[in-house]
Length: 329
Ligand SMILES: [Zn+2]
Image (cartoon, rainbow, N blue to C red; front, side):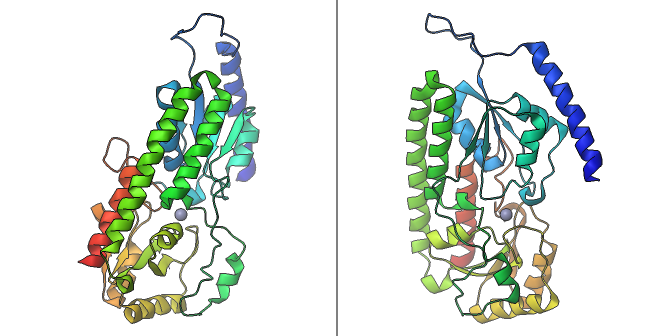
């Protein structure tokens, strides 16, 4: 399977190269005389919906952003398409989330013959370890140790991390396109203020909920940075891992049900990019409700473009509103 795919990729790359040569899209076209409006825009490829939104926000009208992973698609087992490879082959910059979320990217970059800059938006973010070693009750699952060296890639759920991410993106764009650096810096400044406001609003929202009621049960383990930032208690998740591949054993399932009952957690929060079935089964056994449908959380994605949740800010505000309503109600 993998081999067949690689052959296909190579063919697509060849096609992309032919296209490139055909277009003659070079750089050296900046002659004297300012104010030329016809210059080609910086071609940016961004992997996840979150970093694509960041790149669009910081780049503004001076860049074109091709987003690889579409909204509400599980990013943990993504397989790149020939179109993705073609886009990367033509890009000047690839923006990634980092922290191992894009396992497919290195090989795709190689296949595409990409010669530009990869911006790792996670640079400088303080990473959480996987496996919840904080252990509220000192109870360590056997498989937890397995993931001890894994870092949690869901960094964007802390707005302060998002600020670091957009700062990295701004640096990358400015280095590749110095002529527009002032505009990028201006966009960074105003967006960073919005991220600070989001952070402050989240903090104020959770301050209204007693600390012992801030209990979160989610579909997969995507909210660690959020939990840390707003001092919530992570009770457990339906998929017991930082990615979405694991499955609860019968024992783990019973343990989770027991934990939900013991902690008095009020709900299981489903996610937009995951099927809610197991969550419903566990909720039934534990006697709590599933918050899903329109209220599903944006754990690994933001909403569809053009909807209120189609931006990072909109998706994060949705999450907090849903969680606070469910926990406080
Ligand atoms: Zn995830």
